[in-house]
Image 1: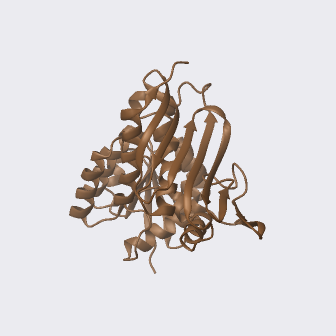
Image 2: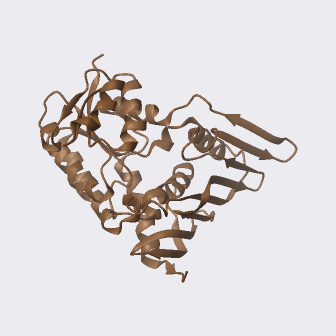
Length: 325
């Protein structure tokens, strides 16, 4: 079977440390080119993937007939324009989250995807991790009885990194766009339902959010509360609490970096059961699922799914009450 040949737009740190190695390691995938104005930034990719070419511009990479798919890890405000250009150039596109800065922009991506006949998806890697697939199955199978409440948290402190794009409003910065996708999308993935945001509290700095505390309700009566912050001590967790048990993920979003991938299943009479996933790499799994989807298999995170998460982010930013201090 021939490999899907990948190019990357930009030599971003995240691409160098995670997605480049994932593309190189994935079955039926090959990293063949990275576009950067500074060829020295491509050297680490070439050391990892011999034969990977340095391309001097994004446009040149898109014009390369030897590239089938493009991964886009650019700053958030550049995701949509370059994804549209890549689709127009006849490439499959995997674009980093958040794929857009507002939900309506997903319609442009979907239209371009359909017109091109190519796959375009947001790089929402956690749905490819077996711990999340397992939680989705457990909840659906009644492991917690009737699900009643979902609680989540994701935080870190990047206040000292003032030049970080996450601290730049004009580049689509802010906690919600950076990590809100995790606490919202994961709850939607497990339940298969779309919640309504009922309240939100925000802290802002220079026109971007650094903290968001969100309440929501799902159509079946499940309540939801979660927060994200880029100004707090690091933490991450997700809980699914029902009438007959509770499931907790202790490293739900970057497993084996924050902590080991682990599901805690609390059930009356059975005590605590722990399931671990030490070998899973959701970046590699994501690339392999993407390759399979270009060959006709269903993709677990289409643009239509990702749009629902952006709807939640838009709604929180719209109705959130801004706190002082």
